[in-house]
Image 1 (cartoon, one colour):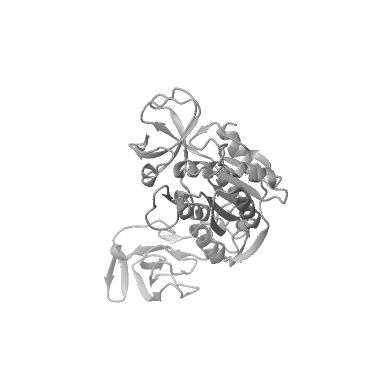
Image 2 (cartoon, one colour):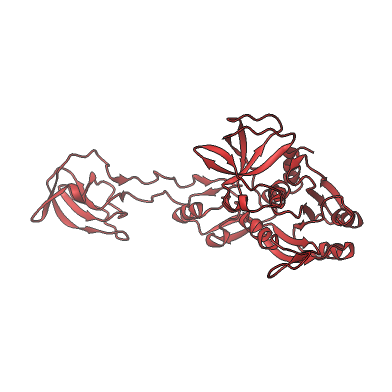
Length: 382
């Protein structure tokens, strides 16, 4: 199937997980299940925007006290001034704040070196949010900035969707898990990658195991794996020693995605077991595995966590690139254009290691200047 259809089917194959009420700090990088509404006006009072002197009436003004953040004075008499710190709550009728550097002091009085408009250098109550106003919509990822906004608005707990869970099975009898690989072996480079890919996208990884190229052993590993999605690397193609598809047949799985008209990673698959658990099959080559992960795993993780489908930005290609099927390649952004990295073979990681994103190039001639889509790398998402 076409790449876009694979993305859509992955997203549509799941429904959001149930919601849970959590303290703000514990809910960061989870997705809001309900709109956040401010409990208070933000700011809750007239607030000094800078260090200086809050005054009322005509000057010069007699200095009658000081206000710092955390203190409050409800009233200031006309012709008087308060020395104030940034963030201090002011009497609501203050005329304006004279910045420290614009003030002229003599004995117990202050005058201004310039004129100011009423309310200048004073934040008004509710100028950022009013009590009851929505400050973040359901389906929004709770970033540190949104958590800080919620805390400022008087919110202590939020309703968020539970995090998706992932189990990882890395297959390959030829894989060495430590040290220098021996004759006939290659070093396992996927165990160290798939777990953080999932975590960067908000999932909890319950397990990561290695499995030999053996049908019985693979069936047992998939059955034992505990996760909303079981990510299996290697063995997803159609060769004599590729065991994922025979294992899925034995386990009674139904394909959501069987093969994708893309490079790299065309034998990527997504299937659903009778118990509802998703199985994602990624190629064993590392770049192809990432492309596959972002195609069939990432959309499902977004759906499980309560997010909407991802909207990709666009960027112009720096050079001509013709292809007969969707190509997903590592790119760097240079002078506002997409340059494909030099090392971009399906088994290569070097080009990916310094890439800014993945570029999604549609079939066709694609002359320089053609707009392509930009798929963020999982460690550059949110």
